[in-house]
Image 1: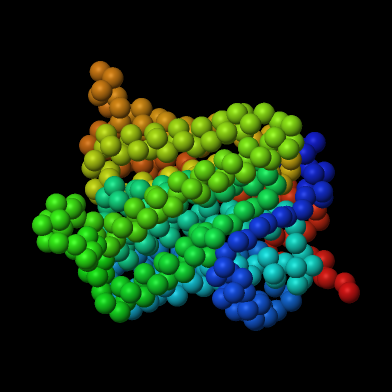
Image 2: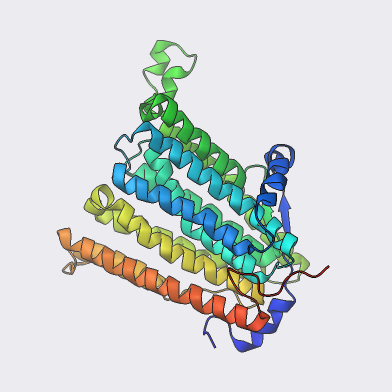
Length: 391
């Protein structure tokens, strides 16, 4: 039996019921009809998880294009590449929106579906932000780091909130809907006007006297996207904590202990920031590689929370994915501690590759073991329909 789901928590899989609240006006009044028509193109013999997987593969295709044409997240791509980015991310978002509908159409909704869906989402969220960086020509800079970390924080808080409240809450502006739409429009803008459009100083567009404009800092259109995400994250995080506090009080459980579940994630993000601060060479030349390893670690951490949610297990704290993050940070800080940096200079890239291999292998083991355990217990298949729906 896989170590990720203890035997005594398996029965909770059959009791689990997915609950969600979506307040998005765009979902309700604009995209709902589109999604209802889109799901009809999928045959009833196709599993919902296959829809999820096919959508996620479009992000991989986009990232391959990105590595070919703009591996440094700054080089200008042929215009058709930006249109390809827009198409790939839109298809991913559309498939992600209808996989649940496909599960209900085929009568195959299960906890595995939520785990598979959110697992794929957690893997691609950082990749989409890297594509965003290329679209806006942010490059390998702190702006890109902020863009990725804002998205990861939002995703983690949503997952933690769902664990404690048992409800997936999507606000008036959420990544799966408005975030996908914004990226698509941004990529289309770069395809039409070129990515240089994003270098426009937003401050100079304000209707203010020249003397006042001269005193304002430069804030490009691209940078304003990052600032906007950071500003929007504040009420989002506040709302998540508020919902968690209310749910814990209703359950007559301690609120502080639930809030403490955010500490390991915060420690991980803080450690990664310190690592990059102490290793500017990594930031400026190997950021995509670095954030790929961080993405695997993040997806594993989130995946453990989702597994705990659907099985009713205790909230997972520190785990083995924190090891490479903390060790890498310690290596970067070694000179400040009067110690010798084991992986110094160009050799630090070797450490990042080791972290990527470790986190990738660990995540693959986790995903395959959990899928096998749930499929065996519920007598279902992951990517095919084992038991046909009966009327």
